[in-house]
Length: 303
Ligand SMILES: [Fe+2]
Image (cartoon, helix red, strand yellow):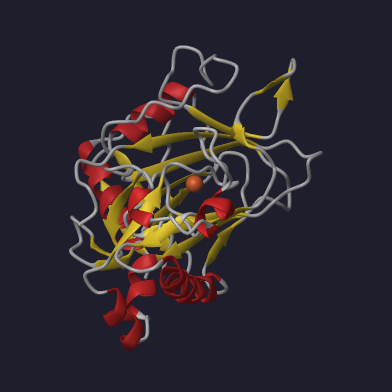
């Protein structure tokens, strides 16, 4: 249901749901102006209620985006790209997601390929609370981002599957890249798994509960990180693969009917990694896509 809010000396903010179960657009807010405590309380409650927020037609400098993101918490520093220079000079918190190459350097990460459903930073001990993405240049009809409600993914799991994951944890591997290559120069993952001595316990990584409770809403959510190189602790690899395939098949099926956002320049979206998975469609390598992103830290590990 659409909610209208009138604020003292400020234009009204309107919260309009985007789909039945995830996402809301906030109308009437210009983030280039300071956000009062009262306005932020409305935005934050809408975020907890709808999991993903969209604010359109924004015109933000990097510092204004940083300032808005900091209302949600402390920010992570962006990784340093291979060429050794920060994505944005003097703003170490700013990530750039882009396929653009300038003067022989990639200005951002992720290229133009498809990104499968995942939760940001699940392979770290205390994964990021939120991710905020702002569109500077986007293709007209490609590179959409999908968002999945992991509360309802949990609530709609068959009882039998829910019972099988109760109390279990997933190990989110940090040793292998998304391509299955050992970061320390060892054999590819398939080779390691095929070895008779392979033991999931030996893989460096962090474990998180498959069913987590959101620390602010108290609701339970399915937390499965990414499909590649994850393992259910305490199960032989083969059994773990079967169980994960069942969970992912359920999540994928929900992805067919969820929010898929087509970006416009000036769109800013912020989502809650504690209860949301996201994905991105591939787009033409000839198109330019430049997004700036901040990542907000969490104080608490998943529990
Ligand atoms: Fe992501």
